[in-house]
Length: 349
Image 1 (spheres, rainbow, N blue to C red):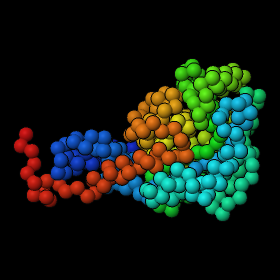
Image 2 (image 1 turned 90 degrees about the horizontal axis):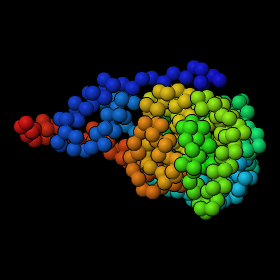
Image 3 (image 1 turned 135 degrees about the vertical axis):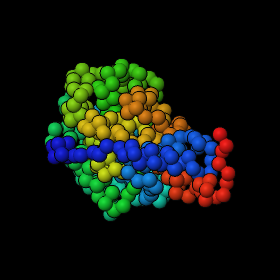
C-alpha cells in the first residue's frame, strides 16, 4: 500500500518544546501553576514545531459505515439507524453538529460504507462497499478494501489540512461498531473479552454476555494477527475505523495535532499506531469514555485523557467538547504577559 510504505512522520521537535517551557516560566504565574495546560502547550509546540502554535480552526471528519456483525443481535439499534443518523448530520441535528459549530470547526461527513445509498448535497460519498461482512462467518473485508479505506481517510484529512485545519478531530457513525472495536482491542491487547465489552448503544445487561460470546467466536474463527493492522482490519475491522486511522496518519505526517475522541476512535488510533508508531506522538486523548475497553485502549496509546464527563456517544463529540482546552493552552502562550512586560516582580527564590 502506497501510504503505509512511503508515509513519513517526523519526530517531535523537542528543542521547541524546551524553548516553550522556558518561556512559560517567564509568564505572570508561578511555574507549573496551570498544570496540564502547561504540559499541553509544550506538547503542541513539539508536535507543530512552533513556539506559538495554534489549534484553530479545527476540522472534524465523521466517517460512516455499517457492520455485518449486527445480524448477530449485538446492538440495541437496527442497522438502518446508521443511514438515518448520517441524514441527521447532513441537516445539522446531531451532537457533533452542535459542538462543531460551537468551536467554529469545519465539518465533513463521509459515507465510506453505509449499507444503503444516501443522497445529500454536503455528503462526501466514498463508499467502498455496503457495510462489512459478518466477521463471525467470514472476513469483514478484503485486503484491497482495507487499504482503500485507509487511503480515503488519509486523503480526506490531507485535503482538510491543505485548507488550513490546525487540529484534526475524527468521528464515526456505524451501528455495531463498539462490537467491532472491542474485537479489535481484544486482538491487539490479548485481554479477555469480558473485561473490554460494554453497553455500546445501550444494550441490556443480559445482552452483554451474548455480545462477548459473539466476539469470542469471531476471534477464534478469524485469528487476526495482533501485530498486523491490515490483517486485523481485514478479519474483524470496520471501514470507518480504517479511514480514521488513515486520517490520523495524514495529520501526523503534517505535524497537525490529533484530538482523539472516545472508545472507537481510540481503537482506530491503535490501528494507526500499529501502522506507524510515530503517529501516536501527535495524538491527544480528549476524554475518558465509560466504555470499559477504553481504559485499556488509552493505556496502549500511553496517554491520559483530558476530561471525564461520562461520555459514550462517539461522532467526535467528546473531542469537540475538549477542543477549547487545547485552545486555552495555546492562547496562554500567545496572550499572557511576561513578568518583565507587565512590570510584575518575579519570585525571589
